[in-house]
Image 1 (cartoon, rainbow, N blue to C red):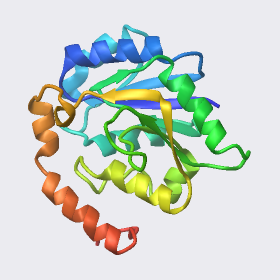
Image 2: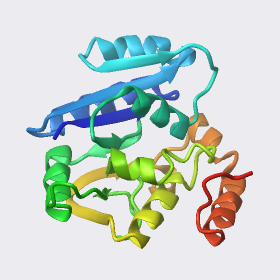
Image 3: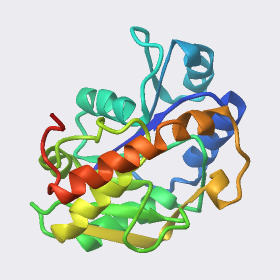
Length: 218
């Protein structure tokens, strides 16, 4: 199966280039395409990434895409059944994607089965993954990428809903280390932007959880 990996870009040009080079070199033998997506602010970065042979998309009609909006934008334009959400603060382990695909196939072996397979290395427990492989049909069933959040708790919602339906697994040896300040990484303006609405996102998460994840927030 071909994997569509999507990496929303925001700030950190030098770090993003290094991370993309590592993601490419360490992916292993797997059929996949990596798309880096950003807005006008990331135009030069996206040009640099395209020179590495990476598929890029620059969205010009908005000053900012949230992480989840960027994921949904590119997902709507792709055709792959298996989708991977990435970020520009990841340090991949050897064969991170090839091992993830094998683990996905082992966790969901039936031809018509779908699920969510979490990568390890994000400092969370077995029941939470910041980055994962998800089947397009499952994503559609869950309402698409959680664009109702500004930045935080979208991954938490998707994981918890997949767990509740028995459609979640986590791969111990498919690793993407999340080099986040919460886990000891360096802080920066992009992280501050992501934290700006963390309390609001948390309140929304709890509101949706107690109401069994309504299809709309209205």
